[in-house]
Length: 381
Image 1 (tube, rainbow, N blue to C red):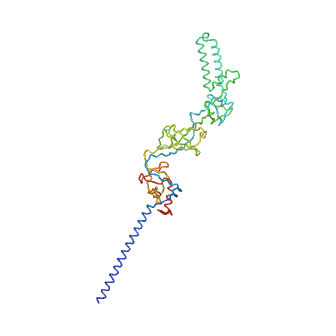
Image 2 (image 1 turned 90 degrees about the vertical axis):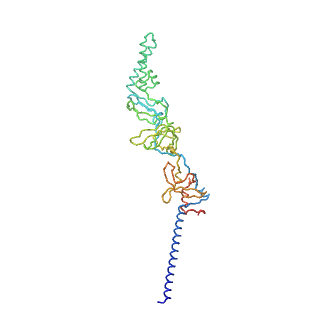
């Protein structure tokens, strides 16, 4: 074989080897450049933010706040019902079996203390009235003769008999004014009147004229509505401690009323599995009535300082995590992922961000929407 062709073959092989190495090196550099670009792009995407003009900040009503640990106050909800104040209500009932002769009031009427509600008749009352008249006449006779004439024993007996007969009439429900009228010739024996023990409004009148009623039957309920009760029902497991006099907000038909705690139940209702907290609410304007349903909001404080933001400041990130928007420089905002630890009404307890961070307190939704449009854009395009 000739030497020249051999040298030519070796040179050709070396040439192909160099080209292959150059291509391989070029590919490695290109791949490295691509990976670097992807990494930088990922970093840019993770820290994407937005810069907003003063006009945008004003238009979206964006405000910021410094994140700091604090004792937060938040409302705890409970369903409730407006009920009568038992200290300001009175149920009028006959104390002996009777017949209703006439009624004078109906639901909604305002009555004064001592005002007649109904006239009743009772045979038992007739006997007691007759006995009273006998003892009254005897007592008046003995008094006119004098103790020295009739003797001490007779004098005391007459007085005691009269006092006992008078007390029995009162026990049967006869008013003092009617007892005085009883001695008049025109007074109908056996009749007596039910009168109101307090001034207020008639809220029930469960009877009819001519009706036979037994002792203890509820005929009329009179209520003073200046102060009413609200019974709030909390789950038996609710960890809520209230004290006498604690302020509470009561909402009825979108109207709010200030109330105070006056009693807390310490037993659990075996049917509803709830405990009752009783409130007193001022009703001078007569806007509330027993039977109305209400919403009660107890004001509660956290056990200690916590790191928390309002619900409006917390947003969902594209991957589903929670995030807030921090302000590094005036008008420049970036998302910051956080962990939701607990929920206290409108407050959300978080961690994963340092105390002292300036964050978007109001308008977070607008900031998130601007970031979603394309990331950090100093020209607001």
